[in-house]
Amino acid sequence: MSYRNRTAALASAAALAGSAVLLAAPAAEATVVDVNYQCKTPIGNKSAVSPIDIKSVKSGSGYRLTMSWQKGVSSSPVELGKGAMNPSATIVLGGADSGTVSVSGPANQTAIPANTPIKINDLTGTYTPKKTGKVTFTPGVLTIKALGTTTTCTPSNNPGPALSLDVTAAGGSAGDGQGGTDSGGSLPQTGPDDSAIALGTLGGTVLLAGAAGALWVTRRNQAVRR
Image (cartoon, rainbow, N blue to C red; front, side, top):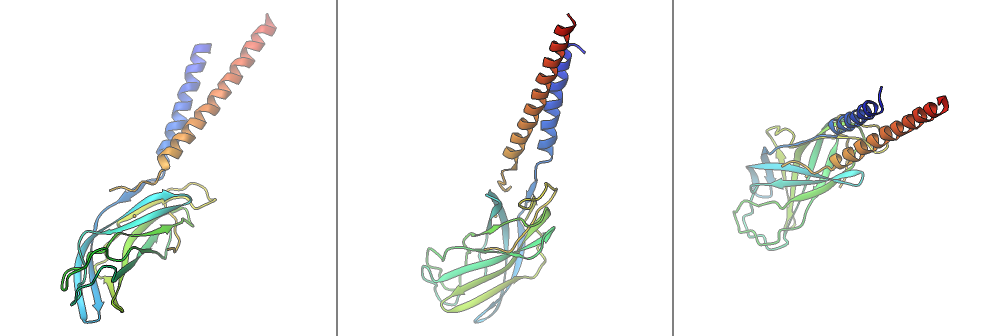
């Protein structure tokens, strides 16, 4: 094989190696799900449906989750002044992992009028993969504390996952799914593409380095024969 053909073949191999790494990059899927909440309040039972989405952003060895409500849920017979209402919730893990992730957020920043659906601020929490595989994230129980009372809202319609991720547990090998732990959210920004590009570049560098070594040996052998 000529010098030019050998170089072209090795360059093609490097490109294919990089493409293979990119295709193996972890995937993320997000969707908005309608959650039918059945709420137990101090003044009786109430129900409300709200579209909810869960987003994630890669953060160190884990993910920062954000759970968002598009409509209000429950209500109060009296006005809730600024800072009077504190929400929290759970996100249920499925697939390769089990358990829940706790998410919480700030108290209401403005007063909530009486008998008005309570809009929940975005709630956040941290998820650190403990297993490798595909993990799903489904809205769980919402808890609202206000004026010394507690309202618990439980999904009654099996809403299904609002997010799924392919993750690798810390110190584990790459897989095609997610992992999970109990702690503490349009497509998530998980950051695997940058790592994949870096790995692809590294693979190409190694192959090219091997090509350079092979060429040096070839030229040396030719020089000796002369």
